[in-house]
Length: 536
Image: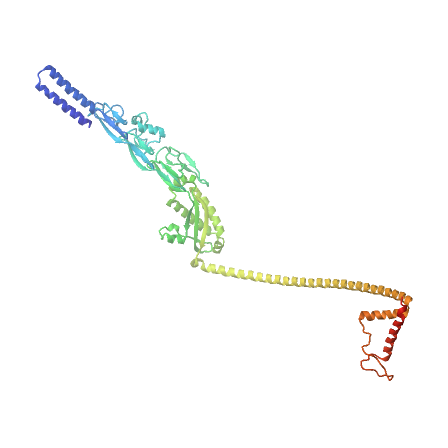
């Protein structure tokens, strides 16, 4: 646009100058020359104006009136011809004459959320020997280098080539002719995992770190050193330069590895390392053993895994597989087959101790060793049958002994019950004897009391009779007693028929008793009648 303005100005100035051929007056000639010069000056002035938008940056290129760049430099910092280190911010800018300066407006570098910008410098001091990336600098220093390309190329000591530092999310007004920016995703570390960084630049590592469970230390790197960094990244998102750092994600969750025939079938036979373990015992039996290993990697041990094995994937499984198989085979050599079958817990304990010690050397914490099926019908069928028969015989002997013991206990129980029953009978008889004695005593006491009562009553009656007899006479007293008895016992003494006698001893029907009795009763009645008036 500026060039077009300048061309238009030149053309207009030439058109004005063409009027000189038509005028001979000096004042008119001076006027034409002045007009052409003013048009040319205005065209040059307008053509030297540059405008940079709010979301842009102006890149300046000087085409004339300066020395050439030397030493392979491509960015000018001292007025040389070529791309200038200085950039134009948003706004109007004057003095950039066309043909001498070229100003190109570029869009700002925009780093979106979840991304990082990888920076490569096209100019600067050369990298140190053996280095692929520029040394990492503090964040504030790196920002100053980006904002001021002249400072980067001079006092800042910026290095040519890939930069270790990255651009975090945001917008940057930088000299895109000096800095080339490539977008990439930020490094995300998922839960139950850590990220181990391996630096591709810096000095050799100097830190010796031993596994948490003990073992030989390994040489790790600190910040700014080349090698596996000792400090892993916990779960989260990080602006990691994935070209300057190799990122290895290591799982820290509990992991279970199966060495079983079923696992081999599930893998379709592709992973031969995941089949069951075959062992040989001291008595020559060879049989498979299903094993389950539980382990985890502590976050602090993750760099050791990467430093020694490269990752927690196939290299770790290969190491675990060879170690587990060697330990189980070695342990089986010292025992017999039946002992191996019967002492499964002892084999688990022994194998766990050995596996922990071995795997701790590479930073793996073994949590448990579980033994599943031991042998099968083809390998241990006859041996297990013999063991079952022997066990059945032992159980039968135990059952017989228990039955004998139960019979003895039953016999003892019966004897005890019989003794108890006899004791109960003896106790009952003793109680009955005591009861009989008490009843006898009661009867004796009662009889004595009755006898004494009769005696007292008899004495009282005798005394009463004596007193009555004294007063009314013995005959009257006897008669009164007879009448009392007749009254108390309701004896009928009045005849129901008239008693007659013809002197021959015959009596009428209905007569009771003999003549003497009748006469006695009559006499008693007469006597009672005769004595009644004289009764006291």
